[in-house]
Image 1: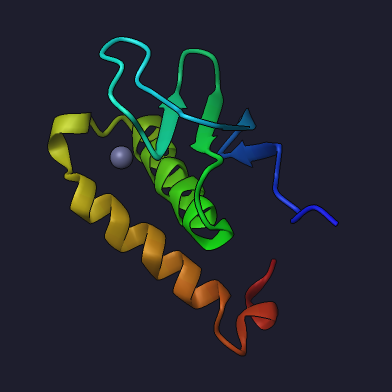
Image 2: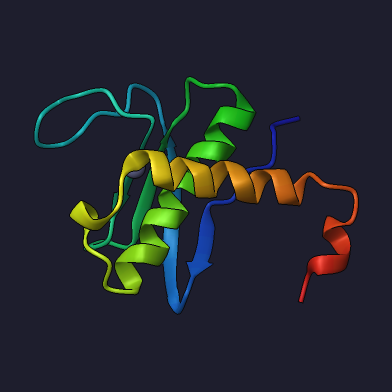
Length: 104
Ligand SMILES: [Zn+2]
């Protein structure tokens, strides 16, 4: 059975499509990427040739970028490291024993 993965997500008020792509690359530079957020098309792409937990962490990473974009925070106002701190932090909370009691 395939590992369940989200293909649509509502981030803030915007619906994003999520796709899982083998050999994901930056469309401009051709640089290999783990994840790519395209705000202009409300889409997120995740490198499919990674462990499932790495795909999930990368998806949270891109979601954090989307949160900041929607809040008007420019890319140069935060670092990739800060984004990863948030993404790993959210994953840790979701994996904690009491997480199910934190849902809305
Ligand atoms: Zn990033």
